[in-house]
Length: 243
Image 1 (cartoon, rainbow, N blue to C red):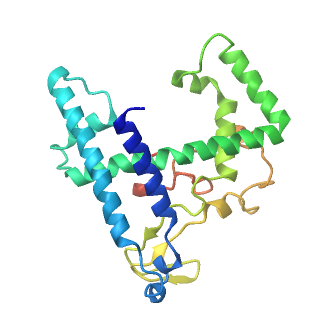
Image 2: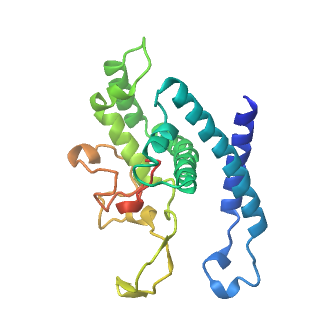
Image 3: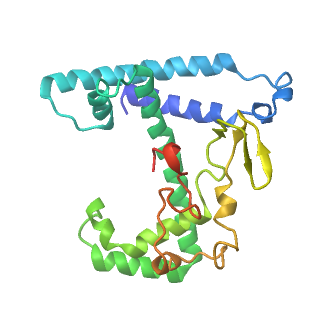
């Protein structure tokens, strides 16, 4: 791994550590005097992250000037910068949203899916049969194969239903006073959505605790926030960019 890669890995690890260090005082304001946030640590981390990201953006800008090739997410954002008046801070934020939302979550989701397949040999054999039939033994699966692997897609959906990588999603903030389910939610409140509970609700799902990918063959339910029964990536304008 080169020097930039080592620095990148260290920043990601530190970011996850800082993110996990938030206490209940973040949500209960009158406790904040007892548990002050490590503002200096957050500021130091942000500056370190921005330095690395600006260096990467600079490298991409130089490469595009020389070759004109636009291959990466960084290049797409730089290309759209003037059109949508994107600030440098916005581009940095979007890049790190992709990194943090699509990396550790993916690894955790794969581990849960593999664990469920080991616990359910019937499902594992059915998924293997589909892979052997469609992919064979002489090549690696590619993205173009996905439409021909409906059962594998159902396995992924079922794993994300039972084990959403962010069970309470990321915190959202109420922009107005609203009433939900008989509860008053004041403007400015931090709001968490328990997608873990929704996906295991017996009023919504038949045999909710059973790992049964076939349920998605019977009914085609999308994962991108159009059906509120399954929300591993959230919904609306704030749907997860790492989806």
